[in-house]
Image 1 (cartoon, helix red, strand yellow):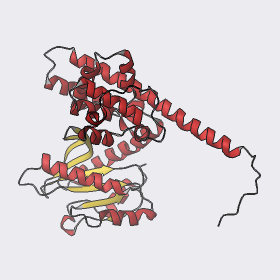
Image 2 (cartoon, rainbow, N blue to C red):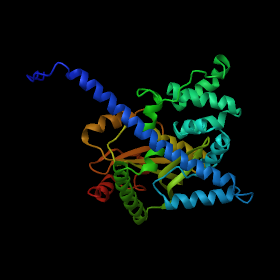
Image 3 (cartoon, rainbow, N blue to C red):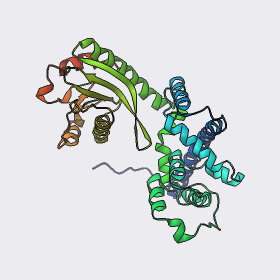
Image 4 (tube, helix red, strand yellow):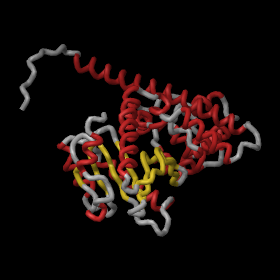
Length: 346
């Protein structure tokens, strides 16, 4: 039990602390909302360009534009072909709106915009939900649920006492903005960029290493784009193993292991098998490379327990916690080979 502090605090200490905490939280939300507004403005400008560029801007041209933008800004994942079309849809949805509504448009995360244009055709109904997002601080999931329940029919579309205010600091929308990957891509913040630099260096190294092994690895791509129900995902490294006749999906994290990583890799394996695997191919296998202290081994074992898919979890600092099944030995790199190649590459 930690000893109690003998420091005598002023009588108003708790009051001042509470006030400062509220101010910090509010300022953080305001700052991120400002960044979000700038990003939405950029997306709308792109959407306007696409909507007014003429008939020759068909699917192939937009796909080329997405490719060129991703090449120029590799850290920004908002430039997929699907997202460019969403930019066009969102601009068309609000282009004729009043200045007041235009201000509201910049206050919600991009994910909520996608839901609004995907699920709602009536401009008045769309405006109702736009207002409710800000008023109630709805996340994307809650917005979708309320639309499916047709909340606008139960409450009526008018929001007569609506005030344009910040979302509540403890609301879902505030939390979502803090975690919004589009925001971090847009900002290119130092911490995220450093993490990506580590991941990019290691991915380049493991890519070269696997090809140099000469064990049947054929390189398919890096940051391989897969689209599942109009959402974009990117696989770090994708190989095809000529001897095993199956895809090998590799995900690398520059951070310690989290149980959610195995779920993400399992999702990618399912997507590759459904969208890319030939009927004569064997089911895909996955390799997850993480920065993993010894204390995380229990997490790894729990996360992998019960999974039917072959997934190997290796650390590029310590050891392979769980290897792949025996049938793959001799075709994939050994624990020792992975350790020798990855240790010290941070």
